[in-house]
Length: 192
Image 1: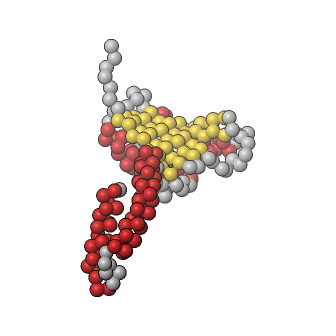
Image 2: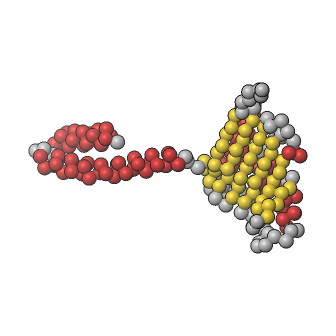
Image 3: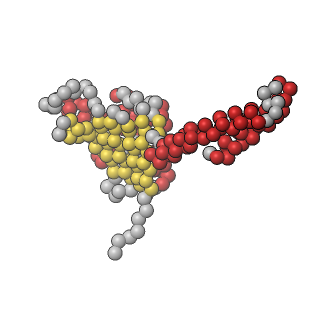
């Protein structure tokens, strides 16, 4: 019979990060803090070959001395995998030209959320933004469509108000114009 376990997991995707060599070095030093250095693997894939090393500097040297094709100074993907032997702390970073995916897990929720917050500060400092959830984007698009569909209705209401309310276009009857505009605003607000 196995014993019950509990792990806290945080996964965040960042976009628009501008990561140079110094930012990558800081990120790869920060992310696995609390995990033994021997349990950290940094890797990249070139064509169909995956190159791995213990540090970013070792990986850079290894790839530079390899027979990999293409420009060896151009890096379009990196990955960091770190986990302690007991499985109490795990960090996985996947970096490509479009995004940085951060996944942190562990039995100590304080460590997990602390590492996630520290990595977030570093990535936001490098111009990163948290990628919005796909469902949030769908909801925003849906609300925009509704507002665009209600726009002609609002225009018709304003025109009808100007035609059927006597004196609504005269300067002496500002109060009725303001009242009509207020009613229109409330109606549009209630529909959305």
